[in-house]
Length: 309
Ligand SMILES: C[S@@+](CC[C@H](N)C(=O)[O-])C[C@H]1O[C@@H](n2cnc3c(N)ncnc32)[C@H](O)[C@@H]1O
Image 1 (cartoon, rainbow, N blue to C red):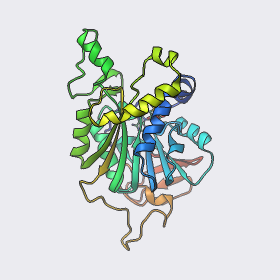
Image 2 (tube, helix red, strand yellow):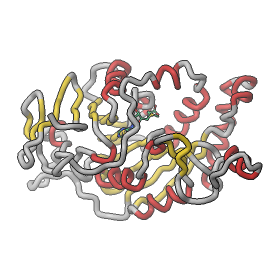
Image 3 (cartoon, helix red, strand yellow):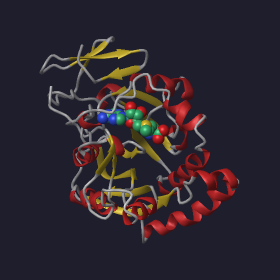
Image 4 (cartoon, rainbow, N blue to C red):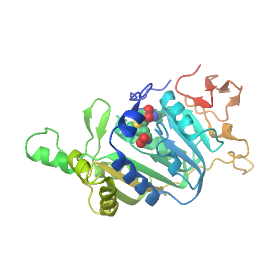
């Protein structure tokens, strides 16, 4: 197994219920829905949702024929299965963002929302996303912004030690990172992405405002202010739409020029995350790598690439 950074483990977590359903975050959820509508391509074949959690955003990827939900936590994926119901449209994959088990160039689009903030090595994670996107692939990334107004004020008032203006990430709680917008741009462009749009979200993320002003009004004004993200980013959450233009992505075609996915089914999506061998052999209860002989479990509709059997 390769050496990868630590994972923030959501196994068994009630995140969807405690943070979203009962956590008073309707405002944040609705502003994300608006941002996604503005940034997502109208149509596409195959979308990868990285760190999909319980599938809160998945129904929003309406124009895509198929969506691959990837998360390290199997219990999050089980919740997503319950939420989304049985459908060929969804493929569930338990895997580490740092060791993606997909062939290069597979996806038309990828999203990563509220996940990068758990990445101790963000450039490495972004590099993995680049590998699995096809030419002109679209990447929609949400990141937690260290250069937010609250952090700036606290820093100026001497109530916070870390400097929001410097480019290095800040780990404010173990495995929870805020990033500087310039660092994100530098990493993405360095990988060959071109940044098409930037939206700022959660302009009114303050307990008092959320209590006294109706959510619909906050969402309305946030939706207008989102466009200011093109010029300035000082909100806690930022969405970026980036296009992979800087390389010839390797399309997942077979030697005969026929696309591998769709022809051979879902199995053709995968490579061995340990040695990179593709394709894997389908042994019904597991997928086997013909090279390193690792076996990757398939159980109750979830392909599991975290640890080999
Ligand atoms: C804050 S939740 C966000 C879930 C979902 N994107 C949403 O916005 O509702 C972060 C998710 O990222 C997943 N995650 C964290 N580190 C990961 C990693 N290295 N590989 C795959 N998933 C990871 C967690 O299991 C969790 O479900």
